[in-house]
Length: 134
Picture 1 (cartoon, one colour):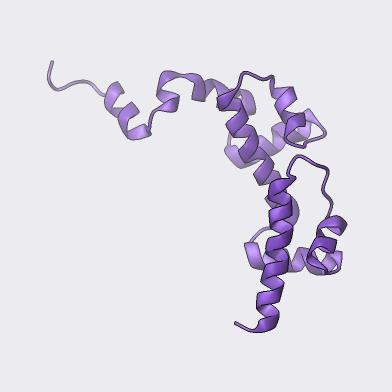
Picture 2 (cartoon, helix red, strand yellow):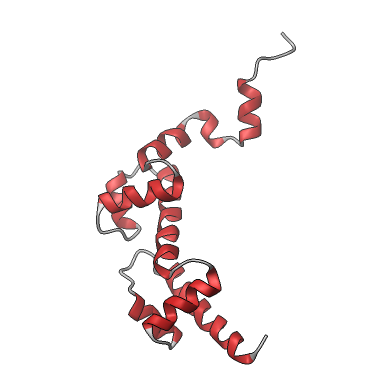
C-alpha cells in the first residue's frame, strides 16, 4: 500500500470516528471534509471507495443502530429517540428506519419486547416446535 493511500485511509478513519462520536450532532459533508483535510467532493468519493457507502448513508445507519438499541433498552417515546439520535423529523427517521431495518421503529420495539424477541432464534424455534417427548 502506498504512503498516499495510507494517509487517505487515515483521513477517512478520522472523519468516520468523528461521525461515530458525534452521530447525534448535526454533521455535514463540508465539516467532515475539513476533518479529513480534503474538499467535500473528494471526501464523498474517497469515503465511498474506502467504506463502500456514502458518508450520509453511513451516518444514517449509525444513527439507526443507536436508535435500535434505545428502542430495546428503554421505554422512551419513538419521537424522543428520533431526535436523540440526530434526526430532525419523525417522518425521515421512520422512513430511514424501515429502509435499513425492514420494519417501523414501533414494530421493531414490539417484536423485540416479546419473550422470543430477546432469545436467540435457534432457542425461540425450539420453544415453538411441538415436543417429541409428549
